[in-house]
Image 1 (cartoon, one colour):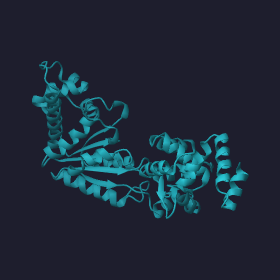
Image 2 (cartoon, rainbow, N blue to C red):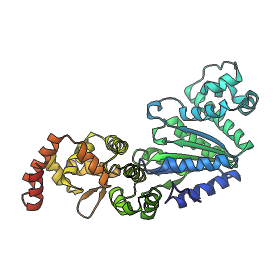
Image 3 (cartoon, rainbow, N blue to C red):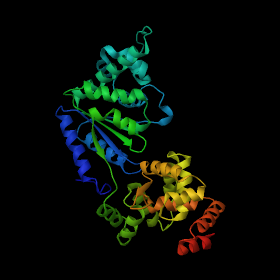
Image 4 (tube, helix red, strand yellow):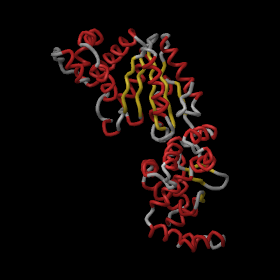
Length: 369
């Protein structure tokens, strides 16, 4: 069954359950869970982690941090360290086998369990990497010989190249092992990662929640009568739905601070040019013509077309018949509200001058200015 706080994801969870059953039968697979920030990737992966842990599996889990990207295989080191802390020294020595020295250099917790290991003679970086790949693979394969293993890496778009390469290596070198690997990837930032692993992975692309799922969450929060307005405001973006419901349940009809911070973080990741264009576009309304934003910013229409394309790729805008439109109302609300008042007034004044052929729009901007 799909948990009550995970509506609208029954098909995706069913695929992951089936993959876990396949892994337990010796058919390993790598699954990439892709989608925009806040769409529910980590929550879905977390539910599979719960299933694995309660069905006799061993879970190796870690998160990838952008500030640690340069650290060699750091997510794997973190995952192995968690397992090592709960493991008797004899068990670790058995799993490490002939790779003990390599694993001890990679994971301090392994070194603490195994005690002094023979110092390795200096090798080239390539040979050291091969040894680390082989040692990590042997350790995970050994765990899988005892019980099915779920290896879960969150935010893989932040991982260093070595981590992505080891995932690829594992997918090719663990035939018949009882291993399921999953990784969450932000689609707007992880195109290179998704491409690098495409030939050895299956993929789940998480989209917006369907209206029925939003209605179910609203009903569970005692706000069934507001489901329609929440759908209109969020368009089913999972994080926006959850945070909006939480705020409404607390009696707050505005945009909660947590949601404002999440929106601004997404916009800033797209770069200053996108943020500037979207703030100007927010003054124009829920949808806008790139040429109108170009006029507000005194930029060329060609430049704004490219910037809007970047915003569309970051899933901040969608394309309508004639214009670009904000992916949901909350993005526009946050950008408009957090643009300093002098800038907003200036934009409204310029818009009034630009829209003389549209009297109603011109009057609205003139009044706002």
